[in-house]
Length: 262
Picture 1: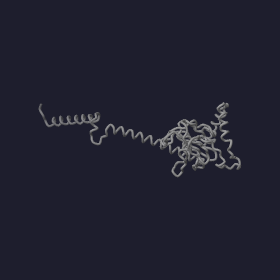
Picture 2: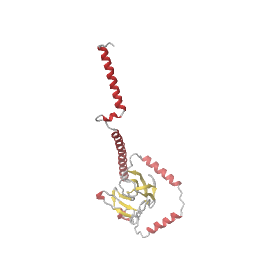
Picture 3: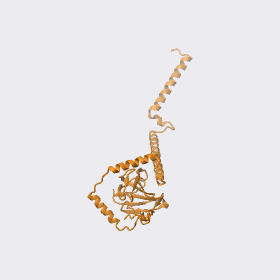
Picture 4: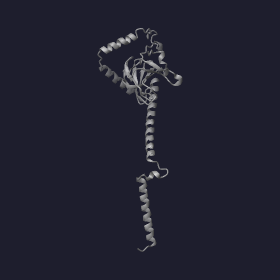
């Protein structure tokens, strides 16, 4: 074989290109790439993907929490929650009234026994809501206890605890303290399954850490009606209990001043 300068350059160039292509393919499709300085290992790549998923979930939960608090603020101020229009509220109210007209309740033995129990508990209540005309006062409001049990954590607005924690039997019944409308019924990261009820005279009550919610948004509830079961849901909980809050005109109240939980 006769060599010339052109042939030497051609052979060396083709050989170099083949070596470059083979090394690139070897690094790209084999585990050798993990030995290159600065290139992440398989475990590091899995951690990067996992962290990206966690950050995305955290952003979704933060957005839900912000919308939750904004809706509460709007309802307390008498405004329409975000995403709803006056026409939607009117249509929903009409639909609820139509459904209520079609519902017919038949008295049962259990219902009669429960009524007798409630009347027995309220027989010695001397407060009269009509004694001062139409003027509303908290002292003259008869609240139904949301849960009969032992209070293990009392109200402390200065330390950010705007309610009371009540311990009772597992899956115990949680009741509404007054007549009202459910404006929130869902899940939050910190407090688990939560239900919020808007009552008359700018009163709002919250029931947190439930295991099961028995009502949905828009439902009308009566005082003493079952709305949930005691649970242990959410991050801010150390055991099965009910965290109950009572708000008036946007200010948290100490429920023990108005409700007998024993």
